Image (cartoon, each protein chain N blue to C red):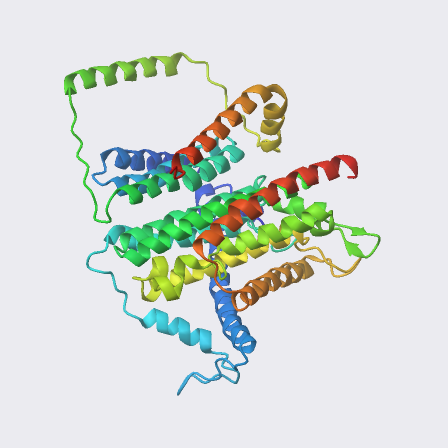
Length: 162
Length: 358
């Protein structure tokens, strides 16, 4: 049963990811991305990372994807704009892609992966909170400072300066 | 009864795990869907009557030949539902068909799957997740995508304006709502819905329920911020600029008719229930009885949860017929310059209160 659900989620993720890449229309790609991101949230749940799954949905679907669609709707006319996939230098592209693929296959084979724990952890969120607030406080604060800078910068750029 | 208990309870769960899982999911999902449909009929009738009484009218009193209820126009919502089912389902020629058909489902799914974490009573919850309240906040953002799809695919300027307005409004008001929930999580130190309710058991000085709204003054403010933001997230008046009928016809739903329109309507009412249910759970003690010592059985728990939730829904209806609609700029400045800073101050206040007096 778990294998079936896992297979279904992987199929949805990969299938919609393919549609994102191959979509002729920008908005269709963005909508397909919704299912990809949802599938990734499902994969997190399979790793007992329920909090991460929630964060994935809040940030990527509720935030970034909405912003993406907003951008598409603000820049394009309502009539759909077709985007063409012109691939330049196919030969070199295939070579690079194949070498990356073989590299990944070798690395995935060699890495000593963590074995899946069979037991459900009681709480996942408080562990993350403890680590963020104690061990990784400095990187956390630096990241939030960066975000604050981006926020102020965006406000500065969008302001009408006479 | 949670899904896990249901799966364990089935006699065939060992031999047919896949089938059991499917059955358990269906047994949980179908009653929730029926509940939403029946509850929507009740609230639509309530909204018609309450709005009429507030305007010194009598409201619906009869439905014409062949559809007379006993009295008070009790069959009005049934007649409305029948009308919506029988209406022609129109897809505009210039609309984007695929997205136009998909949009109502995405909006409804966003409201529907949030029900799986609502604690109806001590024992009646579909899944008591570790991240319950966070899960509800997360999946409610799905509806925004559906609204944008509806507005864009209708290929109509009013629809597009409505969709853009509602998306901007929903993602803005999510922030104060989530910040006031953070204040709740700080006190309860759990995100499980049942855990939050269990934290609120007992009484202060023997008579005042130990609900989070009475926990400290900051939580009292947080409740109102959460509730008002929730009303805004449901696109209800006074925050209904996305479908302001005097400016935008019906916003993102302008081109929809028949059952597809009904699904948007149903998800609006379902969203109201989710917001009211989360407010009742996080601030008003959920299924806890307000009277010390009695009425605390699971059956009474269902009664208390429903009565608290329905009261908050009544307040939403009350809002709708009391306040005029806000302008777009007023709406945004209320959120970003009013609610968000207050919610942030609240987090500090709750933290300091917890460290000094808690």
